[in-house]
Image (tube, rainbow, N blue to C red; front, side):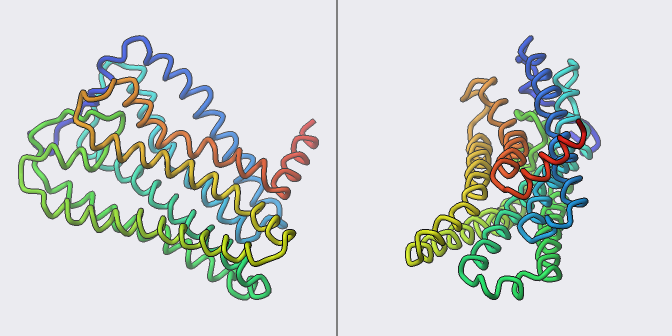
Length: 307
């Protein structure tokens, strides 16, 4: 098989009429409603409301923008595959989709790490917070958190592009770099080694730092007053909920990749694959919108003004 041909998504083949149910749910409840929340209530609100131009709100807006990036890079293709009987994608388009989904996940974890760092500084050194988390410093961290995944995952895609494919059947609902590499009939040890290094730097290092930050926050809170502890936990709980939500979805996706094709029901495989890219972007705006007073206040004002 040459690199100029197509891959076929095999999980769509035996879905039957249930694929129209998935299509309806994806289009009506997830895609449209998700874009409405992210683009209007977050992107629009944050840029217009100057009182929300603070580090934590800026990071929340980065999560929203990243959600739009990841979801729009995935949903149009998914809805097309659900609607039509032909489920093929070109080699080049498959590599691009894999890049988008991987970079979305990596940037999501990087922003969650920056949020943990922001909360650690705010709770550990509240008097020096404004001097440490300046706009310039935060912008630099966001740029690094965005550039590193783009470069490292982009290079992984280039390593995959050089491989000769001997099969074209992907048992996924979207393009997955690890699954593409497994279809190669040439030696791909370099891909495996580089993939382990990238996985370590974009998944395990951020998760380890987040765990360290919250352990330290818990220690600080236990030594502080009840009022201080209550305020600290109130600002941290939304972030912890988002982190757990994304971690569970990521764990499901990584676990699913290790199953041999046919070991689990097709419907379950599709749901687990969709959870990784669908649930976190859908939950994030709801959690932050309900838990941060500044966001709730602005949203209520916009609703009243529209009436």
